[in-house]
Image 1 (cartoon, one colour):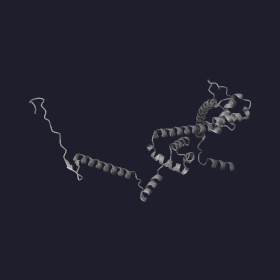
Image 2: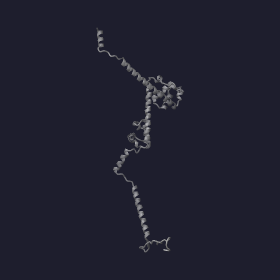
Image 3: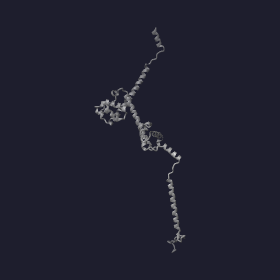
Image 4: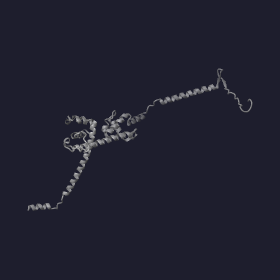
Length: 285
């Protein structure tokens, strides 16, 4: 130590590395020997880890029992169904109705009808497991609502047409007094109603073709030049008039039948027993 007090530092001697004499007479450093041993151990650990990874990547074949179970699960599922198959199934259900399996099974492309029928059964049991199932079911509900409306329209047109033996000549249409016919004549409107009853409400291309081929309109350029959109608008208005007329007609029929029942009750009189027999005896005398 030099001096005393603050700032004094102890000088520590450097550690000495013990050396031993190797077999060939050279000195060998123990520290170097230890480093060499450590490096060799790490290399062995890495090699073992590599072997374990290779073993994990090696494919393991299924046993016979596991293979049978795998095939059974594959048969129960629908691994071959694509997103497009699901879209076709939903669209068909909306178009025909969810219970019309005979029609649905024929329009799903790429899937056999029996497979579609099996999918239909499983879908309606587990549809909540399908992603975005609320949107899919909503699409089907809208389609079925439209089908119901189309059926009501068809029955209304049928009821109106069947009330007349010759609807093209005798059918009446209750036009509102405050609205014009927008260029359409009574004969043209009759033809539209009768043809809608025949083709179904909504077949505008078929309706336009029927007008073009109708002999009574061969010189009627007004109706022949109407677009499908104009025909649709006119038929929509006519359908409203038909439904209103049907409701009035049914109300009149109920009132008539009720009045007839009342007349029958009032006209019946009770006869005293034996009156008819007594009259016959007098006539014989």
